[in-house]
Image 1 (cartoon, each protein chain N blue to C red):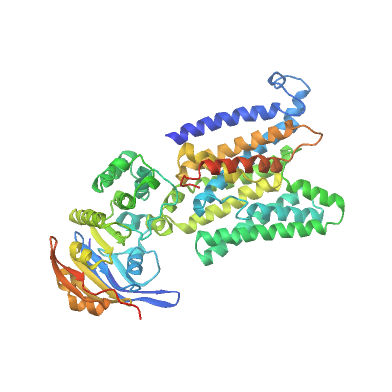
Image 2 (image 1 turned 30 degrees about the horizontal axis):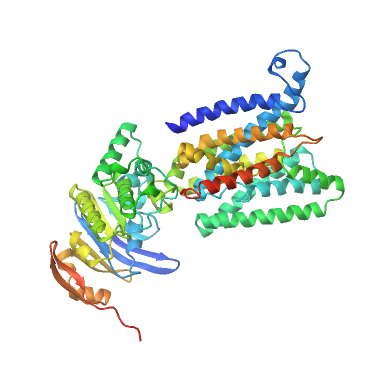
Amino acid sequence: MRRWRVSLALAALMALLFAASLMAGKVWVPPSAWFSSDPLWWIIVELRLPRALLGVAIGAALGLSGAVLQGYLRNPLADPAVVGVSSSAALGAVAMIVLLAAGPVLVFAGAMAAGCGSMLLLAALAWRAKGSVAFLLAGTVLASLSAAFTAFLIAIAPNPFATAEVIDWIMGALTDRSFAEVGLAAPFIAVGCGLLLLTGRALDALTLGEDAARSLGVRLDRLQWLVVLGTGLAIGASVAVTGVVGFVGLIVPHLLRPLVGARPSALLVPSALGGACLVLAADSLCRLAPGAAEVRLGVAMAMLGAPFFLVLLLKLRRSAWI
Amino acid sequence: MDLTLDGISLRLGGEAVLHEVSAVLRPGRVTAILGPNGAGKSSLLRSIAALVPYSGAARLGDRNITALAPRERAHLLGYLPQQGAVHWNLAVADVVGLGRLPHDSSPAEDAAAVFAAMAATGTVEFAARTIDTLSGGERARVLLARVLAGEPRWLLADEPLASLDPAHQLEMLARLRDVALRGTGVAIVLHDLAHAARIADDVLLLQNGRLVAFGPAVETLTPERLRALFGVDVVLVDTRDGRLPVLLDRVPSQG
C-alpha cells in the first residue's frame, strides 16, 4: 500500500525535523548536549521542546483539516482559512486581548469558542441551503467578516501595547511557547484530529456526489458533525496558541496527491504527518533567519508557501485535481 | 424480490412532483421509466432510493425501503445518478471499489466483486488508469461497474445513456440487459423511445407526476399513446431489434 509507505517515510522525516528543530536556532544545541548536564539542556526543555511539540500538533491539525475539508467540500481550494474558522478563532482571541486584556487561558477559551462557533454557524447555514457551495460561500463571507471585526478591534484598542500584542499574535508564531500552551491545546487538537480521522470512508463516497454517497449508506449528517466539530476543535485550539498560520492546510494535500493518489481517505494520515513536517521545517528556518527578531511563522509560511504553490499549480495545471 | 411502489407522492419546494404512483416492478426484467421532461422520472427513482422524503411506500419484498438502515439499503439498492461526477481523479479500480463501501466483507471478497463487476462491464483493462483519462463511454461503464460491485438486488439508473454515442448506447443497453438476465432488478430512466423499446421488458410512463401506463413494452409503447404523452408523431419501424418507435416529426420552423 503506497499510502502506508508514504506515511512511514513522512513519519521518519517528521522525527528528523523534530530533532533538527531541537537543535536549530540562534544557539546551536548539538545532540551531545541532549543527554548531559550541559546548561544548553535548559534551552531544549524549556524553549524548544514545547515549541517542537506544538509544531507537530498544529501542523498535523492544519494538514489533516485541509485534507478533510477539501474532500468534504470536493474543492481543491478549501482549507481552514477559506471556510473562515481560522480568522474566526483569531477574532475570538483578539476580542479577549483588546476588550478584556485577558491572560492566556481566556485568550485560548475565546479562540476555541469562536472557532467552534463559526463551524457550527457554517453547518447551520449550509444545512438550510444544502450543498458544499453554500458552505464554501458562507465560509468566505465569515472569513471576511471576522477579518473586518478584527481590524475594528485593533482600531479601538485602548493603547499601543494592546495593538502591538494583537498584531504580533495574529501573524502566527511558535515563539516562546511553553508546556502550558502545549497542555492547553494538545487535548483539543487530539480529539479534533481523532474525529477528522473517522471521516475517510464517507469522504471517499462523496467523491461520487451526495446522492451516490447516500445511496452507499453514508450518513451525511453524521459526516457533517464530524467535520464541523473536528475542524472547530483542532483549528480552534491551534489558532488559540499560535495565531493564524496559513497555507499548510491548502498546500499539504496538494503536495501529497501525486504520491498517494487522490482518494480522500488515503490522504488523511499522510496530510497530518506532512503538515507536521512542513510546520517543523518552517519554524526551524524562522529561527535561523538573520536579524535580531524572528521572522513570524505565519509570515514565513505565506512568503514561502504562496510562490511554491503557484509553481505547483503551473506544473499541475493539466491534472484533474487542480 | 419485487419492488412495490405503493402510492408514492412527492412534493419538492411546495410543488407536487409525484402523485400516487403505484406499480409492481419485477426482478430479472428491465423496467424503463419514460415521460416528458419534468414528468417526475428522476424524482421517482430518487424516491425509491430513499434520497428524498416522500409519502406512500416503496417496498422490496415486504420490507419498506425507508425503514431499512442506510447500510442495509445500500446492500439491496444500487443507485447510478444522472450526473456521473467523480470529483477527484481516482484510479478506476478505486472508483469501482467504492461500490463495496456498504459491505463489511474481506479484502479478497471485495476484490472478487470488483473484478466481477469490471469484467461484466468490460472495464478490466482500465483498472490502473485514472478516471480523467477515460472517454465518456468508458467512464459510463466504470460508473456502472461501481454500482454492480456492490452486488445490489436492484439497480436504479438515471439516464445511463446520457452523453454516449449511438454505438456506446447500444453497448450500455446490452450491459444493463445482462444485469437483468442474472436476476437483478433493473429500473432505468430513459429518453430515447426506440432504446426503451429495445431493452425494456416493462415500461412505466409518467406525465406530470402521474402514472399514465405501466405494462409490457410492446403493449405500452404504442404510437397513439406516445403521441398523447409527448406530443410527437411516432411510427413503428422494423429494425434488427424488432419493431421500434421512431420519431416521424420534422424540426419545427421558426415564425
